[in-house]
Image (cartoon, rainbow, N blue to C red):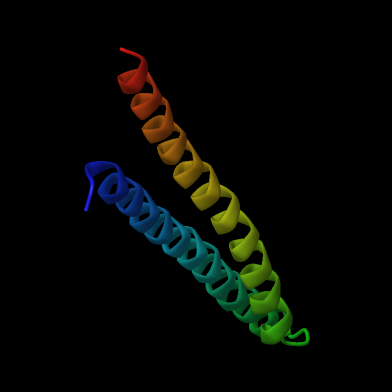
Length: 91
């Protein structure tokens, strides 16, 4: 396997790891938000928050943010590989 393909694969693996990390961050924020709202509802004797609505909102925001960041990272890495290989061919 050529070094360029290995580097491209490594950038893709990094993108997957970044996607997973951002998605997990947003989902855990949603879980924390639900916990906080539930405690506040118990304290104030108000209706409990809707866990499904909060988690769906957190999941959707997580997918969007994770996809944007992973795409930017992988595209930047691949662009760097492309520019380096192009510069190597011209010199």
